[in-house]
Length: 266
Image 1: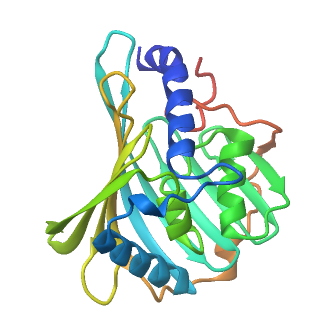
Image 2: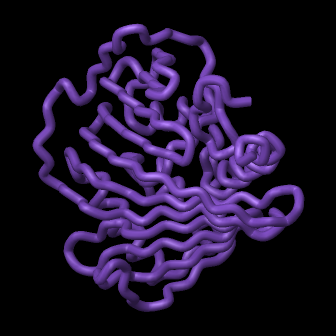
């Protein structure tokens, strides 16, 4: 029954992807609109961007809630968990366990591999050289969601402030017991909020995107946890060896949640 819902909702997800791309400057030539950035917001955002971009490697976990509104107006929320291992400038291992499928994204600086564990099928993309290029290639070539990809950029600030119309600094609040700066932003198609850890390690702790013109204003939220800025990393984490019986495919079947569809799902 849920799979049938997702088939109907595919068009809603396409709209959401387009909205996020417009709102966060993921198009090829984003237009800066720094006039809409409050000075206090700008200070926190630049601090976070500089800190993240300056890390040679890091890992963290995240919990994601993705809302979709069906054609009857019912809001559905699907949760997933993601583990990130990042090594700059051009390597990552991202493991996602979603509502219907498990997937991994592995990039070694030359080849980007997308592996659907349920299907035991994988796809490879050649060409990207950096993390920024690789995360964009995933969305462009496959339509798969890369959760919070813009925060993995070498300079997150540029993409985050693109097309911002207004922003506000709402002081400090607590997320998972951690004091955070609370930032809010408005763009033409989306509103978004960001909670950044206060202190000398300005890490993102929570990130919420609201598709305000979509019926029901569904939200996409990410809570980051277990940050490690000095992770023990082995080269094998960024290499992919196809499991026994794995099929290499040219296109990845995607459901309305931006996940690789399980075998036989329709």
